[in-house]
Length: 311
Image (cartoon, rainbow, N blue to C red; front, top):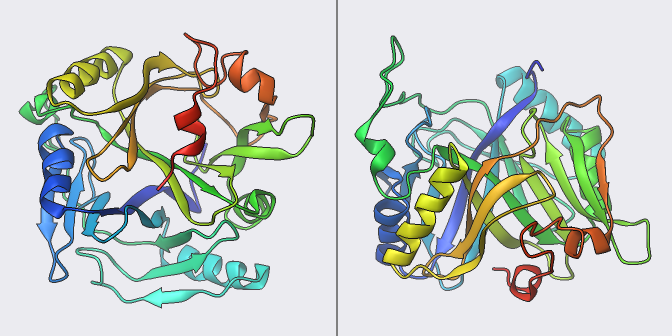
């Protein structure tokens, strides 16, 4: 499919309780590349196959969670158009000047009905891949540095008003609904998997009474074998695991969920469905999420921590 508006997830800023511990986890255990630090003390990182300057920003704070989620858009014209359309839909927008994030152009930020800060931007410095841009090599030593995800892939966010979030993302931002879960004894969509590409999803939401909560940030692995390798590395470094290794029925992705030292959940994810905007979304019932293997194909059950622990 042609990508002409919102192109892909571009970055997230994660709050950590101890910056040194956070950097050790994401740089040394996860194997992300540190690409810079700014005057505010924030640390910038990216996966080994990402081309732009960064995708993960760590900020020390007194509580864990997510500050904002940014999407890259096609160009400045698209940025201006989407800002106007978001305003017409009823949300206030804020222009953040170029350079506020390292190597990043002007951003448009707005708070969505679930209480999360979403932003759009058109420019970020291209750093390239360690494999090279011309006649790329098949291997880089960075592929074996820690867990070594290819890229930041998506995030799952918890908050209220997911029906309004669905309307905003599909009618204004150009996403399509790939899969959803209905609430018990209801046809209300309580969980959404949304895509701006033909990936399984680029962002997901689950209804939750508290606004602005982070469920997990996900990192993409080339194969399920690399997910199992990640499990070995997590065990070696005493990383606390929530679920997995297993596979989802929803998205069909291989997965492990675990926690960073601050209590932020992260995922190592592989595979997943291919989606297209002309396809009707896949529907899951609440029973299908548990007994049907939507969450955990191997164990076919719900996990209390997965449903309740957020930052």
